[in-house]
Every structure is written in structure tokens, then in C-alpha cells.
Image 1 (cartoon, protein in one colour):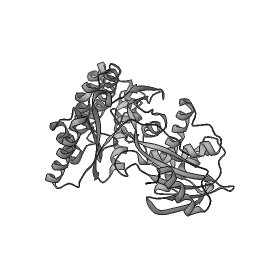
Image 2 (spheres, protein in one colour):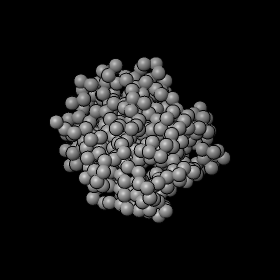
Image 3 (tube, rainbow, N blue to C red):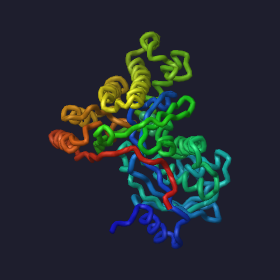
Image 4 (cartoon, rainbow, N blue to C red):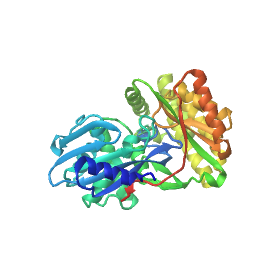
Length: 390
Ligand code: GLA
């Protein structure tokens, strides 16, 4: 009989550190259904929490030392809380240690801990394994140190902001905050409509099985160079556009006023970037309206339009993602799009459940024809947020 994930990581903790952990906590990866590169523009997005989770077995220490281990990495970290700073530690340790730093930065008293991680969110697939790691650690620390940040949604919103600070400041990744909100605030069977202007959320029903549908993740296994630089450049272009318009963010451009706003921007490239953001926010609204009306099978064209916008206007797709989307949509998917930051990682396809195998083999064949690495295709559902497991 195979061990549960909780038991497995708890045993690994005991083998590494001696005693048993105080408990096991976990947090999910995410896919964003629609609303890409909108979070740092104070826009809307609609992620779901994945079944794939990162597990953290943790025990508090009496001193201020952190000992960090992972079943996915030979790198081990030992560091005092006082030595955590931007860029230190580097690598995955920065995401875990960064959470302790950010909790202190938010005024919480924290102590050292021993930590063993077991990550089941595919790495480098654009499915937010780093946010899952941060949020599993944050959930553990909140419980063990009685910080009460895992309670209602407003407490969880505060914890998400702390994890974003960890990622932005210590891991030095200028990401926008959607991923941590997804890991902490999504609910099973729902997409999370996240308004990044005021941090408010609404739970939107997302029940694939009721409509005989499946959501396929197609991890292209493509990792392109300069992803971080490209992400920062897109962010800077959006800030430039909102500055030129004299607005706080591109969220302030009403969809109906888009053409006038574009006329006031200088340069075709910046116009295209702004067009993506404003049209993408509108697509989120339209998708939410369809989901609320029980019309999930009708969202396919929005997914396709979102992909085209990211490919042509925001220029964050790549050949592998385009091939996956094209193969899926020509072999029975209702719609497909890349998801996450782009330049590699994963695409998603909404498919009739009985066509899943056909669409998967079409994508595999297309990759093989092009000489690409074999993609990792799997079906996902909307699952639970960060929690204590044992
Ligand atoms: C990455 C970032 C998020 C978001 C997406 C694009 O996943 O971490 O904050 O910007 O890209 O939507």
C-alpha cells in the first residue's frame, strides 16, 4: 500500500531531524483559467487550485535557526532568522526562509524551525510550485505560532500578501500576487475571481463534471531563456502605458474607451501590450458571466482569444505553447490557452471528457513531429486551498 503524502513527508522529517514533526501542512499549485498578466495591472484573474500540492512537515525550534530540507533537492539550508535578506538564501530556500522574514516584516514574532518539504506540483511548469511552497510554510508557521492567519478569507488575504512580500523581496521575483492568493483563497469546485485592485474575491462555480468536461494541463516542458527579464519588461511596459495615460494602472482603462486610450499611447508595441491587458480583463468578466449562467461549454472562444492576445499582442507565448494549443483545438478541445507567466510552461485545454485521450495523443503526436520533448498532459479539477493535513 502506498503511503499518504502526509505520512511520507512526516517520515522523511523524522529521518532527517530525529523527532516527529508537530504536523503537516500543504498548499496547492494553480492554473489560471483566464486573466493573464493582469494581476500587476490591478486587474481581474480567475485561477483554480490544483490537486497537486506541496507538503511541509514542520517543528518549531526554541532558537532562531532554520533548517530546511526538500525531497526534491539535495540542497540543504541552515540559516539564522537574522541572516535572511534579499537574495539570501538563494534557490528554493529563499522562498521558505522568505516567509519567516516577511512574517517578521509584518510585525509577527517568529522562531526558528525544522522543515521537510515534499513538492508534488511539477517544477518549472508554470503551475506555481514556488507559491505552493511559500503558502505551505506560511500555513504551518501561522498555526504553530498561533498567528491565526489561516482562518477566514480576510486572514488568508493577509497571509497571501506576506507570501508575496517574501517572493518579491527575498526571492527577488517581481511577480504580481495571483499565485499566492490562489494557493490560500481558492475553494474546491470554484474558480477564484480575484480583483487585484482591492484584493476582493468571489467564488465562481467551476464544475467540469456537471457538463461532461475535463480540463487538461499540457506541460510543454519548454523552459526558455530570459523569462525573468521578459516578465519584468512586460511589467515595465504596462507601467509606462498607464503613466502615459495619467492613470494609476491599466485597470482604469474602460473596455469601451480602449480605442481612444490606444490613440494616446506612443508606439505600436506599447499599444499592443495595453490592448492585451484591457481586453484580457474584459474576457475575465465575460467568462465569469458565462460560468455564473451555467454556460461552461461556451467559454472556449474566450480561451482561444486570450491565447491569441498573449501570442500576438503581449508576445509571451512560444512555439511549444502555440503547437499545444493548436493541436488541442483542432482535435476536439472547446478552447485552449497558455496559462501563467509564459515563455514555456503549460497550456490548458477545455475538452469533452470523452475526448481527453484523443486530444492528449494529438498533442503528443504534434510534439513528436516537431522534435520537441514529450509533454506531460494530465486532467485537473478545482481543489482545496492551503490547510493543515495532520
Ligand atoms: C506569473 C506570476 C503571476 C502572474 C502570472 C501571469 O505566474 O507569478 O503573478 O503575473 O505570471 O498572469
